[in-house]
Image (cartoon, rainbow, N blue to C red; front, top):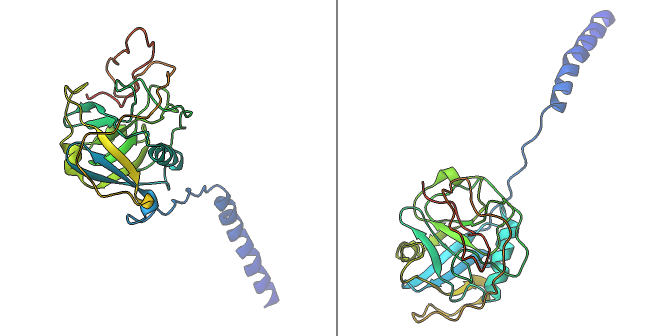
Amino acid sequence: MRFFVGMFALLGCLVTVPVAAQKKDVVAAPARLTPPLTTDTQNLLLLDLSTGGRVTIWLRPDVAPLMVERIKTLTRQHFYDGLAFHRVIDGFMAQGGDPKGDGTGGSTLPDVKAEFNYLPHVRGAVSAARSDKEDSANSQFFIVFQPRLSLDKKYTVFGRVIDGMQYVDAIERGEPPANPSRIVHAYIAADNPPAYVAGPPAPALGAPVTLPGTASGPDAAKPKLAPAARKAPVKKAPAKK
């Protein structure tokens, strides 16, 4: 009996050793962080647009903490107040956040490292605009009108419109628009902003910077060049195919 017990124990060791060895080769996928609630006022960006209402954007620091922090910082500096949507393509997206208003500007803060993630570029997605360099996002962003999944994991999605998309749809089209729509005011909901009041946009307070490199992007055709005096690239979302 002892012989059989010993044999069974030996066989058990022989069986379990390969299994243990196999476990060493398994790489666990990184755990996804829990997103904030859609009622978390610390992560709700409010854009009062000249198109007639307030847009609520749910920010996602769980997937893009650096870009979300940049948006919060600039919003609280009133950087976005008065800025125009300078590049708006029907059926694609509306781009804004440039104090120069021509796609070549940004804030005085350093560029933000890319945070490509699993969030798709669906209707209402809010993503960071950049030049050909992956780590060149700064202050500019675009809001998607219609799904453009070819941009997934090439641009940093950091939020999504959860209310007021009709005011985004009403943004004046053009590259640039003849009469551009503007962000009248931008707020973080936790800062107890006043109710939306229609009126002329406040003066833009953002400080422009000169950005290095040449603009392009995975879906870009021929990028628009800035005026020769600026010698700066057009920092923008990819062009419509």
